[in-house]
Image 1: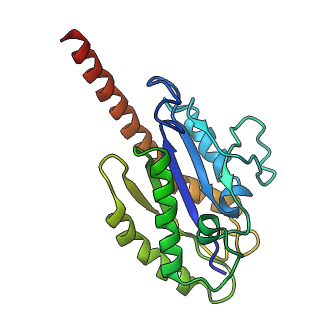
Image 2 (image 1 turned 30 degrees about the horizontal axis):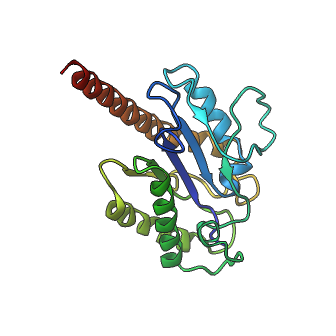
Length: 222
């Protein structure tokens, strides 16, 4: 079953007026069980604490994790164990035989929903990690290849989509605790890939805010 979708999104606010320009950036880890019952979110949050992004607000309706032994990090997330992107988008019954085109179409529907909520949404999508059993990795690689042109086709200046590679360098035998979910080394590898992309997105948001503030000040002076 190709169910390991990893979706992260970064937003200034749930709506355009829900947050002041100098309020914390909101970051939503969004996906399936590899967003929900793992520890890379803990490791990512801890890594951010020594940076200017320490006050970034992780958001989401859930707080589940995998006994990460970290009582300090912001556990909020939108991970949904057992669901594909297509199930989240369409609320269909889980089916392990979804075609890549159906998953990509579901990604498009999700992006459209995100942008309806916030036209300036910043989105990071992962090429997904391998599995440790079965013959699913061929299908996973097919999906990963399709993600890049899909992202390029939907990319917007005001709402960019960045793709990160979580597949390369990840071991299906050594970095998974059960053949599906990352163990500690897998969480470390995922954090290492997520971190620079997420920080870059935060920097883009910060620059947009600064530019918006400068324009407002010029208009006020004028």
